[in-house]
Length: 116
Image (cartoon, rainbow, N blue to C red):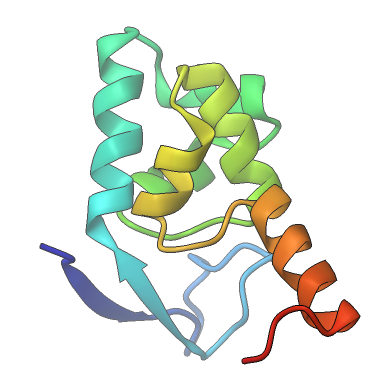
């Protein structure tokens, strides 16, 4: 069910890598996450550039996300709000813990209530 592929950004003279991405590093791409964002954006009839403006990112970055790049938790939360996607669902598809759950887990771990 989880589809992934590997992309390499950076290299000789290619300018596809925005400054917030590591250059010449391998990045795992989650196609399922990108499809979720694209489908919801298209269902709301929002253009990539518009979605980017609402979320605070560029249209090119939206395109990268729709191609499977997983953004920061902050951007995921903003996408969920704008596209009316349940926050827990979007993090599940992104294969990440929602920030509120992560904080609770870390709190339990540091208090000794959770052993890993």
